[in-house]
Image 1 (cartoon, rainbow, N blue to C red):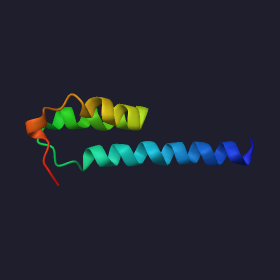
Image 2 (cartoon, rainbow, N blue to C red; image 1 turned 30 degrees about the horizontal axis):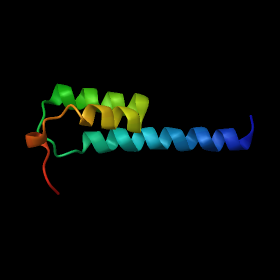
Image 3 (cartoon, one colour; image 1 turned 90 degrees about the vertical axis):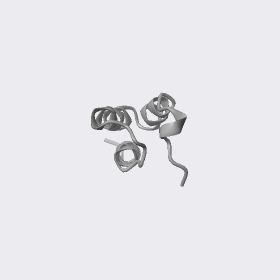
Image 4 (tube, rainbow, N blue to C red; image 1 turned 60 degrees about the vertical axis):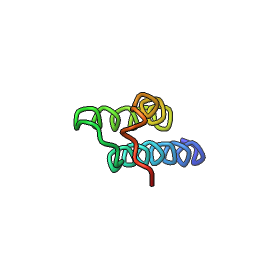
Length: 65
């Protein structure tokens, strides 16, 4: 395989893991099942899964940093 494709796939994999980790470490007060589902979506779809599920979280559950 071409080295550029390998580097791009590795970068994409790291991106997906970072968004899954960000969902896992989030301080949002939701149930564990919902948080696991959020992590799974983030792991599978990366930023698209993270932000699409983030839109379903009620605003009163999101803490201000």
